[in-house]
Image (cartoon, rainbow, N blue to C red):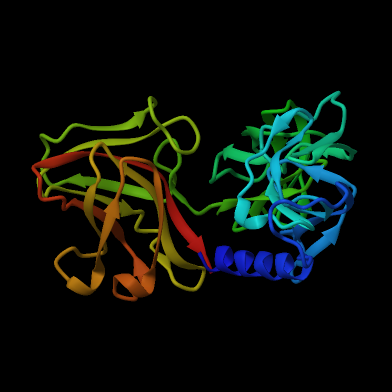
Length: 350
């Protein structure tokens, strides 16, 4: 949210700086483009290189751009390679358009064209249009060094894969799937994929998964407070990451506990939080806890939705434990129970 506010503040400043004396919406000025800037340029693999309002001659779909020129006040539509991108009139002046280029904008063997339509006319502007940065939708979070793993996602165009700063050997590739060999020293590194447009870093740290399509080596045991509650740890009809998730039909106030292997109780020198994706068939409340549900300091009430929602629970919010021996979930909706889906459970690196 803070990043969004900072971005909107930056956009407001950029628009203010671009305003002319005539922003009435009925400009008779000549329709022309004098320059295009990418609103933010930030390589996630290089710390401290973030720049804003960077001139460019390439449009990468799925990113914000600032179009500068004149005659934009009566903007009716703007499209890239024939596909219109939605624009917010608040982010349009006679001299500038701030726009998020639609992620589905075509880019292969296309005309490389931006088309601006206003009440005063139409302008076709030649500019290279390229795909978005890669998306990563699934990969094994706890692989061993030397394993051949599959990374699923999209826009893997001329890709390279890194584990931290170490480049991985690419075994095979397509636009939506990569097979790579995990390099030595991958533990506690972040996987990243780079294509012709940019780099995407996976949210999950290698070796941090508790559940990842199946219980990992960190998972030790499980306990249902009511053994009659149906539980499926390989549900494949609605998943967030990978191919499977946990589906738990919980009675009212019932709980589900996941124990951590006693040889790998996770202490706080490496990790700072527990992460998971969760949804319910009905929106409601859940009680999350670490180590002991009966200690109020170890518990946190969360609001879940009927769509997948990501939660990251800092250790400070569940009693500041020095190690995590178990985590748990208690149905807390107060309406007779719920069907709960859990996926991609793990720890967050400091």
